Length: 246
Ligand code: MG
Image (cartoon, rainbow, N blue to C red; front, side, top):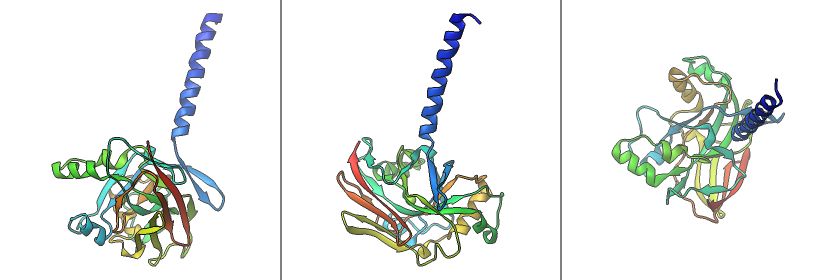
């Protein structure tokens, strides 16, 4: 190999290395406790209107079929990072949700067997550009930009699933500047977690590292720059973050 060729090869390889590192930086891994195992996030599945009171506050009928949508993995950020309000929306809403980390799930799993494939639980925000979503709904168009923008899914660290960690009485609570805005038990979900997993497995190959956002209770509303937001799975896991202009 000539010196010139070597130089070209080296500069190309270094360029590739930086590209690779950049890509690694953009792949969010959740930390599962205890043990601090890190698992890269794949697909982020979300349930819409999984609490009757929230469906009503959105002026919608309680759905007879599960409402499912997807956020890209790049929507996930560490919950402790600031929430940067995107410039393309004037109405970013908070939606607190129980978040489930799953293992590789066989297709068409039964509800009874679904629980086996839950790796861990966390809490997160399904941030929603409500102004953009409302326009999309009126036109019958998808919600992808309203729901899937970069940073639209802040999450806590995760706790490995074990018996009785999560119960129907487990409470979700979101406060803004100390004021409670959303608070309800996960027992109010229309579809409990194993039913959600069984349903998704009819359509999708769920893989280790997929997250499922399980829907939000009533009380959603806008975030303002300067807000201090605390997101809790009460007595289990929580995070606090600050809202900023981007
Ligand atoms: Mg939601």
